[in-house]
Structure formats: structure tokens, C-alpha cells
Image (cartoon, rainbow, N blue to C red; front, side):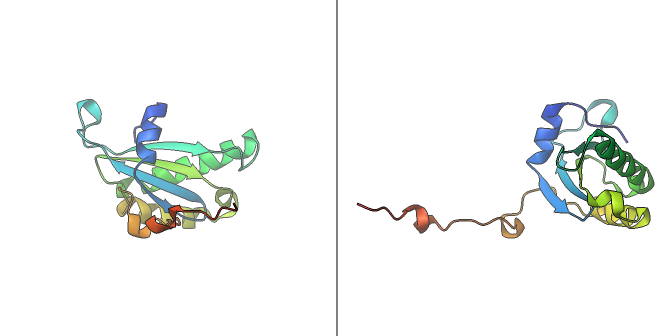
Length: 134
């Protein structure tokens, strides 16, 4: 699968939907108008934050995720950009379970942010006033 490399591509995918699993978070977004050699092909990007560990640990997580994508690439939908955010759970998890979770996630990604299922807390519009002491 072609790989995302530019920061702007990662930021574009971050505006799409998210699907969290124990070993990774999958972000996905449909490309507007696929063109050129990569038209109709799924692309993937990998990232692991420093919270996961030092460089050795982060690279190990990325290697496991890359290997899992090679195993599950046939499940990826064409014309969609994916970003895999590695979690610390990817080190301890059984590789087969990572591949199975990734296969299921690639088949049915959330490509748009769904406000009903976002999981974040939203303030009601009337709660804009805060208590103040005079």
C-alpha cells in the first residue's frame, strides 16, 4: 500500500472518523478526487507518539503495525486514506488479534466524524453562562 508522508495528508485524515482499539487508533477519510497513479488505491500512514515509549519501543510498534497492514491490506477500501496511531498495547497484544482487529476496522472505517457517536462531552448551548462571584 502507498504510504502517507506529508504532514498535510496526516492533518487531512485527522478530520475524518476515528476507531479506537487496544493496539491502535485508526483514522480514515475518503479522498475527494483521486487522481494520478494512486487513484482508487488505499493509502496508509503510521504514527506513534512519545507517550508510548522511547525510540526503540516506538519503532517496534510501527514495525508490528506495518506487518499487520501487509497481512490485512486486502480488506482496505480503495480511495480511502488511513492513519494508524500506535498504542502501547500493540507490544503486548497477540499479532493475530491485531491483524483481525485491523481487518475488521479497514473493512468498515468511520470515514466522517459522527457527532452522535463521537464519545466526547458536549456542552448544551444554554450552559455558556458560568457562575461568577460579584
